[in-house]
Length: 447
Image 1 (spheres, rainbow, N blue to C red):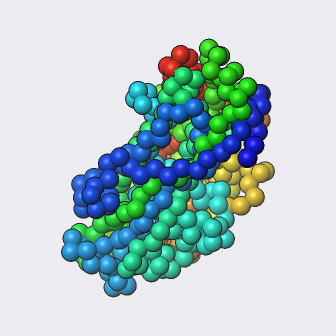
Image 2 (image 1 turned 120 degrees about the vertical axis):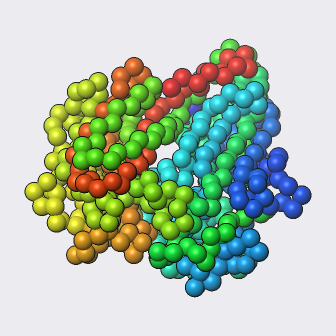
Image 3 (image 1 turned 90 degrees about the horizontal axis):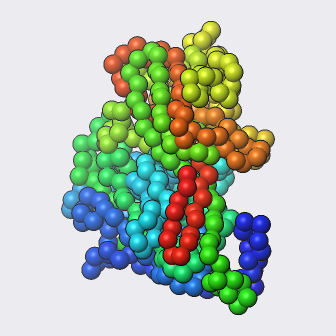
């Protein structure tokens, strides 16, 4: 099979492709992995050093996912009330993911990966995707009761097969594996998340599953590699330098507990394309009663909305890219239960250009400040995949070169009605363009 891949304005002709399947290096004798049960919270997979290219878009993590409500490995039942974040399914168990070569040089690392997925995935997937193809692969389901019954309460477990969402894996460039003219073998390290931040209760008590946990079995990585045609292979072997560009995600965390939130962050990135993030009360994190992966607008202690009145995006202390304050509809009408349209549009556009957004799960149903006409936000009752609220800004969706924050701080100022002692965590993700320079078997990443 012959394929042609467009990379750095050069056509690389591939002579053939070949499928592979690799099991983790650190699998125990029973083939099971679990953060809480086996004490083995890491999946480590090594793709060998070979004169082939890895086609990142074909790579999938596969296995079987099963949930237990206690250490005796009893499965949950309806009365247990055990749930997980329905819009991202099995992605909720991945705490971080790292791609590095066999020398230990980090090529890409995404912290707070499950949080990134809950912020990112609903924007680009439709409700139909979550029911059908994506639901089958990632165990998602927009209906939280159906997801609980078919995934969490499933007595024999569910098989999954998920793409590893990252810039390196989802880019157009094939990844050269050779130590001579490539990265020198690729190692993928997946750190699993604690069960306390994966599961939460349908009501206000987790007494029936305080010892609950998840377990993985039959874990493996599949994908395809390709080998260039002889003349292209010879060119790669003789050239002194190989350059690959790809997009990546950098994770940051801040917290606020006042009516005037001022964030100043040194990103250290030179080609930032966009920034986006989501809030969650810090008390929800690693809490079996609340969903630690919920993407909410700020709330007070009694779960009444701490409505956002204005947002100011800054670069080096100056308003940028908007030269004005974004005053929300809630500044004049705090009782409005729907999110501000400009805040929502900027959040969506930071992930995918708004004019090109053909499918999304973000809607008036999933992006609310308060539930119906109630004073509080009953986020567990949301249909269509749960709450999907966030903030964001796109810096460059035309030239794709980005804006430099290498030596310039990013500033965000938010005025909100947070008038109680209820700290809010802001998980912020910077979408940046990276460059790998491979020279004589050495790898240098420029961000």
